Image (tube, rainbow, N blue to C red; front, side, top):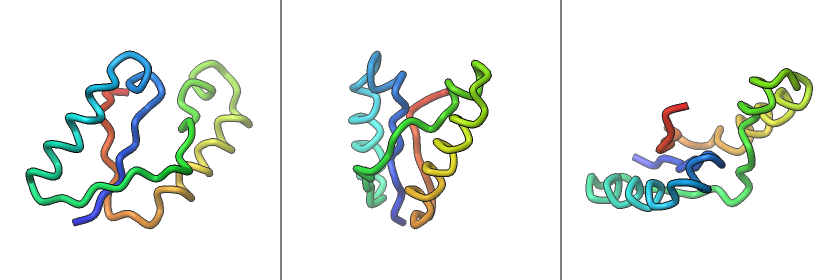
Amino acid sequence: MRVALFVACYNDTFFPAAGRATVEVLERLGVEVDFPLDQTCCGQLHHNTGYQPEARRLAERFVEVFAPYEAVVTPSAS
């Protein structure tokens, strides 16, 4: 199985080791992990604060970047 790793900006800022640990666990399980370099903000913060047009553009970009993958894994609770 091939998955994409999405590291949310909050996690990347405050818990950078979580992304590395996620990759380590997945690879031990035999999962191929890619980290798409084109990934950006998913738009959740924009959506939650009322910036719907901006959130929509970011969400559409997220879908475009992660569409080729069987699954998207993120070490984030949000």
